[in-house]
Image (cartoon, rainbow over all chains, first blue to last red; front, top):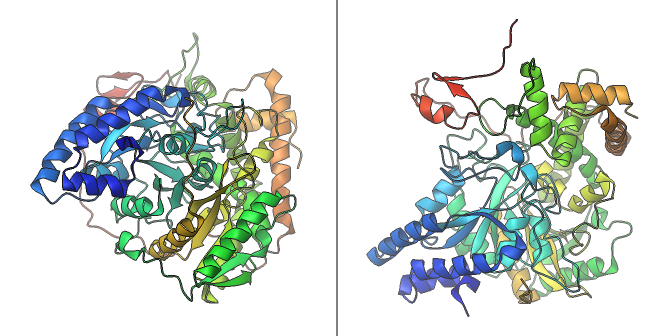
Amino acid sequence: MSANTWTIAAARDALRKGEITAVDLTMSCLTAIDAGDGLNAFVHKTPDIALDQARAADVRLAAGDAPAMCGIPLGIKDLFCTKGVPSQAASNILKGFRPEYESTVTARLFGAGAVMLGKLNMDEFAMGSSNETSCYGDVVNPWKVDGRKLTPGGSSGGSASAVAADLCIAATGTDTGGSIRQPAAFTGIVGIKPTYGRVSRWGIVAFASSLDQAGPMTKTVRDAAIMLGAMCGHDAKDSTSADIPVPDFEAALTGDIRGKVIGIPREYRMDGMPDEIEALWQKGIAMLRDAGAVVRDISLPHTKYALPAYYVIAPAEASSNLARYDGVRYGHRAKLSAGDGITEMYEKTRAEGFGPEVQRRVMVGTYVLSAGFYDAYYNRARKVRALIKRDFETVFADGVDAILTPATPSAAFGLGEMSNADPIEMYLNDIFTVTVNLAGLPGIAVPVGLDRQGLPLGLQLIGRPWDEAGLLNHAHVLEKAAGFVAKPDKWW
Amino acid sequence: MAIDIDTARKVAKLARIRVDEADLPKLAGQLSGILGFMEQLNEVDVTGVEPMTSVTPMRLKRRADVVTDGNQQAAVLKNAPDAREGFFAVPKVVE
């Protein structure tokens, strides 16, 4: 098998044994990337940086004490600021922006010897569930069952597509309402959103600061454990970054979950949920039970209100965060007419630079924060958020170790199929994932099976705060039992 | 709550996003739909519940009150659409 198809674990072991060089491994990914333009996943390729980093990694590997990520070629979501390399959050308003600094996450990964292959497509400012709001155009899912091109999900759609199509060994993603887990489920890969505060947000273009977390998108749970370890840790530059020890996540993959209590929340059984999703969920429950876990029905009574609360809080924070795009300090500035003042500059710049979905969310956020509506919408949503968090705290206090739910309400849908839909219909994609962001918990999507058409479906496990180690171990058991090895047929 | 065209125009103005008059009815309709969806939150009894302010209860870390960064004028101005003589340049603000 060509090296670009390897996992992080396999590549790490081969690099350490000298069976391949980081340069050769990187070349194999660069070749796959150039052959994968039809997926529109990589939007800024950085082969020169990649080969420089790979050569440096080979020196470290030869010296003998290289970290696990040393020499591993990665794709980086366009939301991460990477020094000297275009970082535009898939938005025209950041066209031409080349940061003078490096995000903490990418600095940590590169410090550990990882290699950057390029920047990955995404929904504009991470706002979307289908990767159709990007200024670079749609990303295509490598999975295909008929003539249609399918969405890889969003917002980390480029990351998901690139990993599933073996254009890279793994990728970074970010997750505000499901943006790592939903695309992972749509493309048959693994994606984990860590506990809020586990990974530094510094240098990641902000969408909704109380919900955003970065995480790895990988081919296996073991890879997620390895890469997450390299991304985590306290950062003085992010005041919400937690100063707590980072465990060895890979060492936690014991495969033993005997006696662990798995909660099955009845409120996640949604009206109109496809039979296949319900069947997959039952299959996952049986797998964990067979592995010795105790399965318990639980109630998270405020689940129904998570989506409306999210769509108040996230746009409110976005309207505030995106106020910085004013055409003054970086990015796009509109051409002005004679007599235009600074207000016209702001208004024209933002109308030209932001796409329709971003404009809509900024305006919704502006409205819910405006005088007279702040209490009715924003404060009420924050109170409901406190209740959603309390629901989880209650079940964890009752002894639940992890919660199993579907990851998405359907398999991947066709690009363009939702173009005439109400914005709310698109928002429903996040129905199983937003609760986790609102409560700040870790959540992971694991591929478990294929639907009738042959498209991947995933389940989500939700863990206790800061228990990524336990969560990854549960996911590892589910992954082994499911034995998901299907790959998309190469058509691109 | 339904958003009328005047409210849509006002929100666009507050958000500093130029919206053509012709596009306001569609925008008003979409905003109304989204806000209507949020109305569900009124079903929840939030009596005595404090609005959530921090995701993880933690005390913000303190540090010594000293300068740790600076003297990066060129880097700060590097990406500006219009920088002159060490400043960001903008259209006239005060008449």
